[in-house]
Image 1 (tube, rainbow, N blue to C red):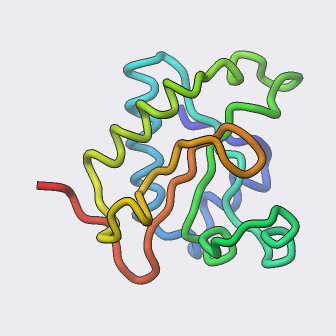
Image 2: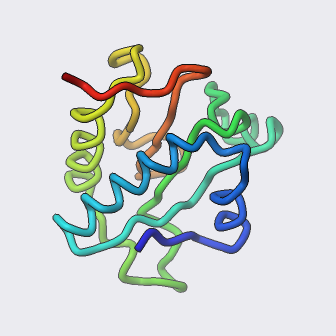
Length: 138
């Protein structure tokens, strides 16, 4: 079952501002993770204020626009130790699963799932394009 770092993120997950197709994408990725690795993903970031986004030196506006969800592999050592043992290879595999299914229409410039280490550390970044829902690849 998909996990959340805290109750604020649980509330954001259910907020009507979060793009509904993003929930489907994250749940599909989590289902894959559970079947393949017998572990759940942990949502670590959804909405960010523009100020929080700038403080993280993010050049993307996907989080302030409710178009992104991050699932991290760090920061849970004291709360849920079993959730920190994802490897980069496993995250890359989950990212490939999602990106092989769906396309934002912007190719490698804006994949549905970005798994390369970036920002504050190892995490999966799920995103959707502004106004355009992702399409299934044929």
